[in-house]
Structure formats: structure tokens, C-alpha cells
Length: 359
Image 1: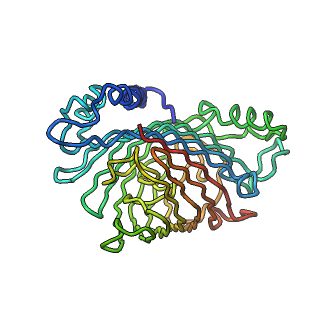
Image 2 (image 1 turned 135 degrees about the vertical axis):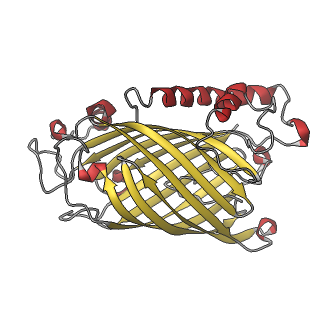
């Protein structure tokens, strides 16, 4: 989300990081594929994810989301290497509070830009629908790190932004609906008030796979995770598991785009990304959350607003397919969740499409 004053410096840093990450192809074009000290450069990655409940046959709840993620090269052993863009190295030196402790084999920095849109079920009502979830738009910008040693990973992300009219949820949803010839939602005048929001997310993951998985043409793995989020945007504890099976399974930490380290944002030991042959796999993922706060259900923190009686425990299951070739990766997923608040008419269902490219 875009925040007022508190997130302006964060957003500026994110934009600087974006420029640094996108500068990497020029360095590659100059023949600097090999970094100093004998290291081979793990290329930066750009991920674009689009979520929409229409993929699940609904138009309510978590109605739409879009997220752009920029992932740096490996920073673990050569943060002063000239192969790493100067702006990325500068930002890295000034993020001590988010950096993982020393000793990790691989570490990369991630920047995210995201918008989420939440609506009730009945699009035609202009009045406040008290027994359904509030209208809400959320706009976020964030920075964080993923750090890997062997089959273990920890990820920390700090996100700032805003919930309310300034998040432009109404404008974006209406523009998309009009472009598609669909009817627009009429109750946006009842959306949550503007409120700066933040959260810090931390998770730890462990990958389980056969010892010779990298040598197998067909293989499986499982990635367990636990962690939580703290902030007025969302506060919860969570845990879950993802299972994958397929052709030339990647050596990373999951393929579900809703995971903080999913979709190419976690360090991998595969450096020859550009030469990667076609690969594909299926994945099944689950997550259970104990939710203490969710501003899109509990309403504004510091002033009166629409809210509903949220359920403290929420479970989610997702399934999908990921396709990879060369520097490209595509993931298609569908998610089913238990009801999030008392009186919710339907269980939430939505789909997600993610496109990733390494540079």
C-alpha cells in the first residue's frame, strides 16, 4: 500500500531497488555473467501475480489482487561485488533491522508492490450491508529478505501502506468491470476510512525431498512452514505444508504464490536458469491461521467503521500447476478457504495466475 509520511521513504527505497534489479540485464549484456571471487551470479527475478475470485466462480470477498515482486541476486557472499547493482548494494547496507543473521549460504532482497480489493456479495446495494464484509481497498509497498541454508529457509518482510479510499480500490475495480462489460459495485461509499497500516511477516520453512531428487527426472518434495504476522493490517499465527510432484522439480521452497517465499522469491541452487529445459509439476498446499486481527474484517483501528464478527481460525487449501522453461515460470492455482466471519454466505474461492522471469 501507499502510506502517507511513514511509508514514503520505504516506497522510494523500493523504487530504487526496482531500478537496480532491472539494471541487471544491461550488466549481463556486457558479458559480466561471472561475479568476482569465483561466484556465478544468480540472476534477479521479476514476478507478477494476479488473483481474482472470478477464477473461482464468485465475485465477492477477496475480489481482486495484484502484486509485483522484484528479487535481487544472491547477496550472501558478495554484497560489495560490482556485479551487484550499486543501488541494490546501498539499500542492502541500510536495512540492518530486516537482515537475517550471518551464516546463511544464500540471501536475497525482495521488494513488493501490491493492491487488494475486498467487497460484499451483493453488488447492487448502495446502503451499508451490516451482515456482510466491509468494502475495502488496500495498497502496499514492502521490503524484505529470504535467507537459505541447505533445506531451511527463513523470510522476513516489512510492509507499509494504506487502507481506504486512497488505496484506489473503487477506481480500479470499476475500471476493470467497465472494460469487461460487467456491472459495477454500488456500495463503495461505505468502504473503510483511510488508515495507514503496517505489518511485519516472518516465516520459517523446511524442505523435505529424496537425497537424489536433483538427479531424478520425476520427483516429489514437501515444504513445511510456520510463522506469523504482526501489525494493524493483520496479526496472526500460521502453519501449513505444500506437496509437489513433477518433471525436473525446482530446488526452491514452494510454488504457491500466496507464500511469502513462493514463486521464485526464495534462493535456489540452480544458477543456470537461462539453460533450464522444460519442467512442470503439480502442487497441493494448505495453511491454517489463528487470526487476532484483520483490518478488512475488523474495520478501522482508530475510528468507528463497518465491521463483522470474524472467525478466529481459518483454514485454506490450494492446488495448481507450475510450468518452467528457460528464464520463464508460470503458475496457475485455485484456493478454497473456510468462512472468515460469522454469517458469511459462501466459502471463499479464488484463482491466481503468476508469471515470473529471471534476467
